[in-house]
Image 1 (cartoon, rainbow, N blue to C red):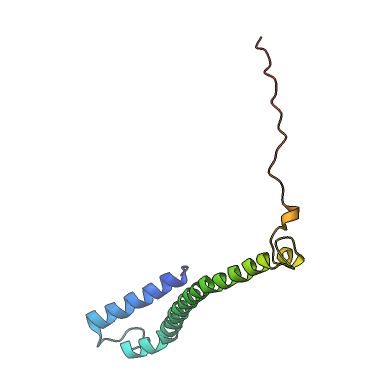
Image 2 (image 1 turned 180 degrees about the vertical axis):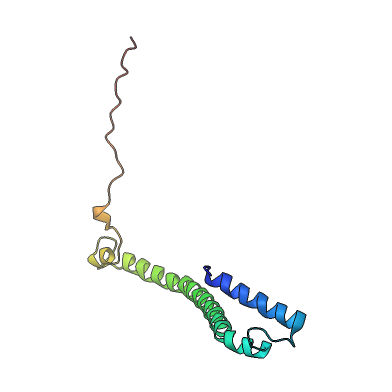
Length: 122
């Protein structure tokens, strides 16, 4: 039987529910419902563990994102302090080492574009 883990989990759940709801007292494949449930329990437990881990991952990402907001405020305070420091400033090595372009290395923004003469139509 080929399928995805989700397909398998869904199938296990459907078979368990149907067996329980329709004829819980009957045995199939030499197993009672309780014995079958015990045999598929490792699959159910692993899925429950994955669900818990996914919830923890989502919570950790939220914690990280919230912490990053405050951290970036602190980063901006430090960068602005470096820019305003008389011995460092926007032209200093520390500013460049922090990943910024030093003031003296910035392009002026001036362009020397020339207008092309219009070619006469033939």
